[in-house]
Image 1 (cartoon, one colour):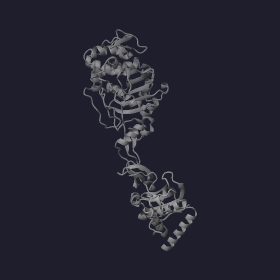
Image 2: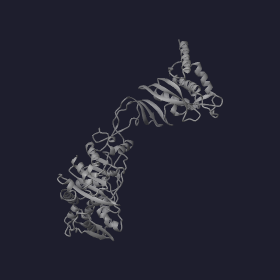
Image 3: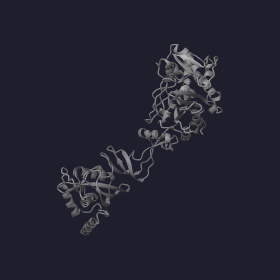
Image 4: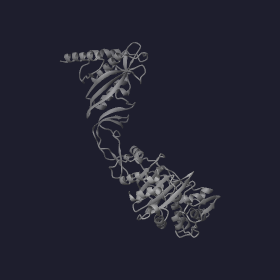
Length: 552
């Protein structure tokens, strides 16, 4: 019986060679070695890798050597197969690792044909073939190839590298079958509902990828299949799935519904395709509910570091209340222009001079000269030139935040030692003062929640605290003033009529254009938006913020 099988196989090989190597070459594990294969292996052992022929092997020579190699490999005569390569010792161990890692039961090869000169290995002839492997969990098939070299003594050998085992398999990588390893199937980064995949939102794809790499997922069950693993056994890539598992999940604070609104908001038709960024927070706990951006400048919602304009008057007012003892009814004369440290400052168009203006009235109409005058008089000349920085850091939490998951954000800045015109410009959010929509959303949240809660995107992430929480008195003053801005001030054209809303607009000069800002809150969320090139805060960022506050 065994003799008949041997003869049949030898006859099949002869027929296949006569047909130019076209067909299926399938020798099952457990059959004895054929005499032709043994002869080929002896030929390969005489191969001299130090004396390569300048002429590639012919198609027939290359197919013959490849068949001898695949014959030994299919029968798991691994030392014999390794002897058909140019580095037998390395090949022998790699072939054993292949069999062990896949829990190989049966291996067969088909369609073994020459593909002509190799474009990768100089002086070699490429031979292609199909692989069918019965491994732990199922049957896996894939196309592969080897390069066959020839030495000057006329002997041939398969050129060995990891790609012989599987195309593209890198150094230090190996194959495994059965339960898929961690990392091979990816991690799902989800919204707070645990179901919505954040990678489905255009603005969150990069953030989701970063979190997937850095955060620790929970739950999930592994599937089965074939995968590439690294030297430590960690999954690199899934090649075949026999049974699907359930991916591990990293649950974030993102509100899927609000994120959908935010994605639409930054592309509102009123913005005329200007780059925009917005962030929404739950002001009760600092949870980031939405991050969205548009344009080609990257994620300007969390990294768009720009002068925030008059939205900074929230912090300026807080400093005047806390450090100078002012109240909303304190005098804050509004003049058309003001010279400060040899620099002339003016108001936005539409702001009327009001010599009898109070601080609350100046805040409502966003009078620049009022805040510069009061800032200089009560803070700079009062001996506290770094008051704005102190208020921002110690009350509003300005600093180096980590929102979680390795997601990078750009820190805001209010230098404590500015000089010249910047010393006046800081009180109206210009000069060297910079912020992001993320920070300004947090400023509004601190006012509404009567306390700083550092923004985070992962629940349970460490949150920085402040050394001097906002006082109930200051929070109350700011809430009243921001409410007036929304109902009858600069934000009223967009936010008037909305219940429980407080807001502050901002228009910041930057080179030859302006940027529009608006930050606001309602009974549930705080929001900030930046529109690059916006003519004013209300007529650019106002459209974005309204959508988020109304959820439409």
